Length: 304
Ligand SMILES: [Zn+2]
Image (tube, rainbow, N blue to C red; front, side):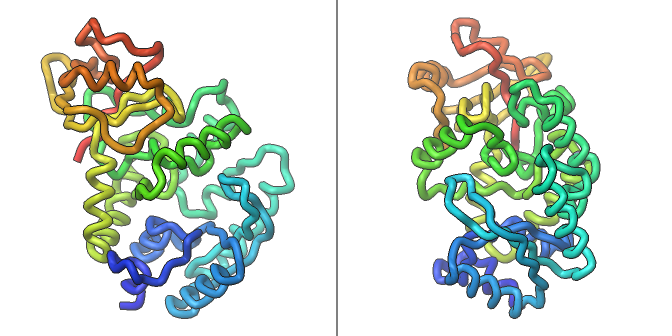
């Protein structure tokens, strides 16, 4: 199977750096027919051309753009359906020429679930400065844990909406150099229990697990832990597990886990000094009462 040359734990596998494993796995799983990606130079262009020829993907060059770290890149679409690529190209050009920077057609042309596209647009147009993660948590049911493949806390695509956020992203990336923090699902769900994303995300994970089991296992571990969340770059991953407890949840943990955020050292220390939290069904920390955290923190109970 040719896809195994590109989705593999082998360190010598062929790499197209701009193309995420989750996007490629989505194409392999049939969850997506179109993927939005980018290249930085001729070498990456040649590697992507070879991949498309090998896997019989079609390609459309969109034009120049900037990556999250401000490097010049060329945007591209690859996929299995020429008709869908043409529709996606049309939607992309409309987004780039408009002032909104977001469109229903563009999200749909990338095969994201309709509920998630509508929810992302509602956040984008009505957002009063709150991060997308807070928006999604607010739309998620209380009283349940969320499967690890729904965890998008470390996925900053389409969330770096201010110059400050882009600067903080560079600081965050520096802190976590070398860590694989790619999500399983290459879009943002409308809720951590979105039925469409639960189903499609599992199919993507199955492909990753079959073709790159070590990488998939590392991702599962990284994404399975409860997160104390305050803002885009202010969060702490608790090195432990969440489970039912009287009237809500408990988290038992030992210290913090990767990735590191830009949270104040004092807050990290306070969380590390505790080994158990009690939570309300909506994730508010109810004990220990002596634990002093900045206002607005809540726990997102991701689980294996
Ligand atoms: Zn959804």
